Image (cartoon, rainbow, N blue to C red; front, side, top):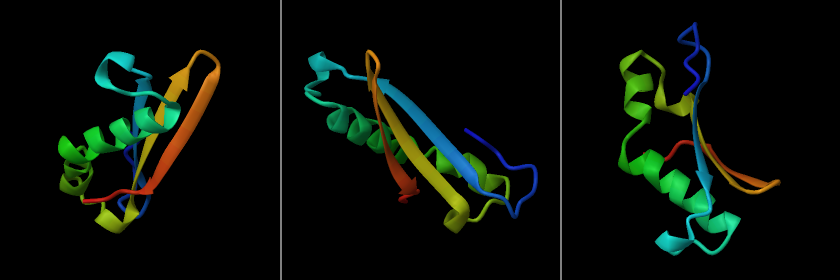
Length: 79
């Protein structure tokens, strides 16, 4: 998580995932979706909001990798 020093800045949540075939993930897209789902379910944005960062300034990204292949997905955090 990147927490801005100034409350007018943007908060950024990053969740890194490797493809977990045993969890049914078959592609980097599946792993990005799993990362974004984890961010929502565990309410990672709550800490940023508690620090005074407004929800419209919070962004969430799922980063999936398999060897040297990487896929990034996300954007504005969903609540």
